[in-house]
Length: 180
Image 1 (cartoon, rainbow, N blue to C red):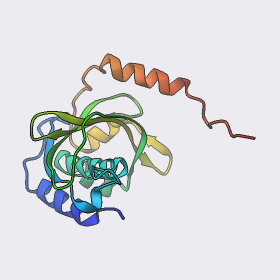
Image 2 (image 1 turned 90 degrees about the horizontal axis):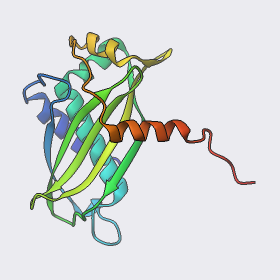
Image 3 (image 1 turned 45 degrees about the horizontal axis):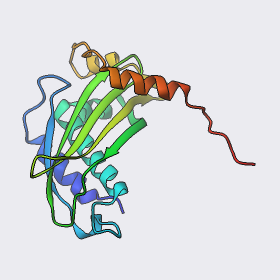
């Protein structure tokens, strides 16, 4: 089940924090790995980790002013791709910190970077999302989204590893082959 109460709590908390100065500011949230977050190995389930990343992105969007803009413009928000690395386990009742930020954007997508950090300073996981704002006609150019948010900032330069990921995604077959 999707953790709706966690979303409401984190968005409420984010609405009481200062609004971001730039779209690339980092939203930091703190979490606990509860028993219903665990897999058979008594560690944070990878599917639940992705749901927790959803919560971090939603709270980040709240602080950036994107949620209000989406409602006002009747736009949607979707994830168009992701790349994830899991490196350290998060166990039951362990506290951890999540960091969420917009990394850069192009004429179609906003690239969002998130990570989970253990209390000892180790990074447990890291994910890059390619997100898109949509309307009834398809994708909305991120520059138009920024203007609707009252922001006129240019994208930071796209890191080489994000460029490489985008190139790999462009070469990926779509739709995927079906087994016969």
